[in-house]
Image (cartoon, rainbow, N blue to C red; front, side, top):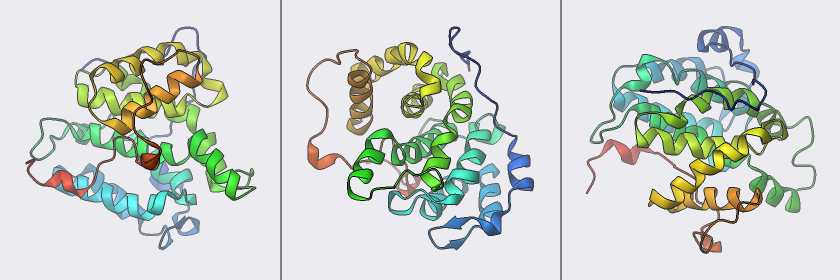
Length: 249
């Protein structure tokens, strides 16, 4: 496996704290999830380090329900769960092979992060602001989550050149969402190459739509019409669920 370095012309992003620090120093009971406080989240999060890939994928699905239910950003999403998932991308458990598919769990972790980032993307935030003024005020969970983007970028960027295509694609989708942050504009020219590669090679339409829209927003004139119709605007990029526990048909 190979890793990339941060773009030479861009400033260094801050490091994420180790996952052990996230677990030990977070006041979990004070965090909100879709179904109450986050006091049970530490136990759930540690299951992501189990050697059984079925446990890992099921845990990610459960975690998504708690901190991303109905595409909502909760305090637990912004301040802990996403930081934990991003910080274990380099853990040996992230190389566990997924059942029925020849790819590491790291691809699923990155896909999960991309879905959460989609929920806080500029496009989704602008749509919500139209109907709910004040959606992005400074004291909201969404604003806190978006403030993490430079730190999350540093955790995701090494996997843009991973040896597995199934890892590179969700890493690029996550990075494209992260690069909407003003502090990460220096990475956009580099990421445009990854976006064009996805448009050329990926058959997953939600990911193709994310890359097409990023290229358009950054003035790179993407080829062809925009993927997906307006009816599919709420599709999540690179979404993974418990369906991945079953053999493909």
